[in-house]
Image 1 (spheres, rainbow, N blue to C red):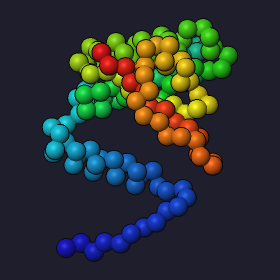
Image 2: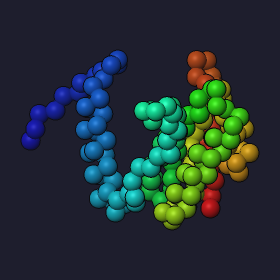
Image 3: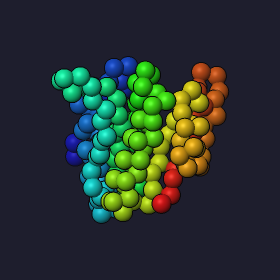
Image 4: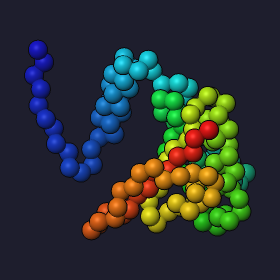
Length: 142
């Protein structure tokens, strides 16, 4: 049997270790669940002649649900309807893939009200406490 040891990295862990851990976890989960459907998806906001990414949405298929990992509309473009458009595109992708719905999390200093206006409801919450910011978990079921 292989000798094991615990390598504690309280700061600056190696991202290669994260990637290896995620690959092993995904492989283990696939044995039990039959695998994840589809793949990651993105709706990117691009600007300038070089088409550089200035914001957008990144999501993943999450065992029958679409999960919005990241959403950013640059501050100077907020209020222009871009966030609504990004979410609508993500929902369309999720719906086309046969997902049950979309879920995400947001902090108390971010956009809970924005998501609620789009029809998302809070299904769980981590309260603010000491240094910890409050966090909300929202979903929209199709």
